[in-house]
Image 1: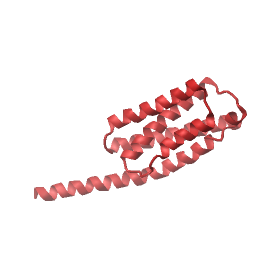
Image 2: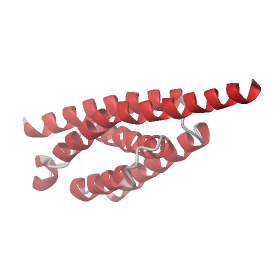
Image 3: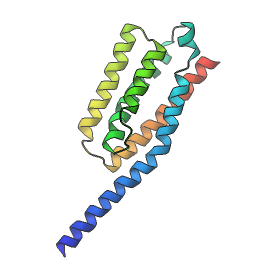
Image 4: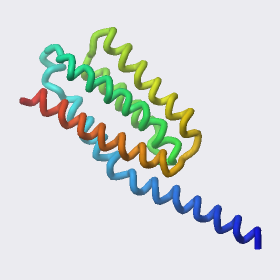
Length: 150
């Protein structure tokens, strides 16, 4: 009887992790697409400088990418280095000043390590946080892209 309870509990845990992975695929791809749009900023191509608010949003986007990099990885999204690559693309296309680049990289790494310590394995809260970060990052990418377009 106890063995049946343990088997059923293990099966439910596996099923929950599969559900979480499927639910996060759509927002992740949406953020990836929006991030690609935001990387084609006119400001970076024209050498314009960013406002303080815009730089703050870029730093926040770096933090989100770091957090999502760990959370998606721990919850078996099988995306490999997608989020780290997006961060590298962001730096390459935006060409921030040396100080700004160091700050963005530091915030990416800090968010990654904070979430790695907080979530050594996938939990319901890890999936919730990942979805929340993806939504926030999507909105941020849209705002940044809109500012440079018009």
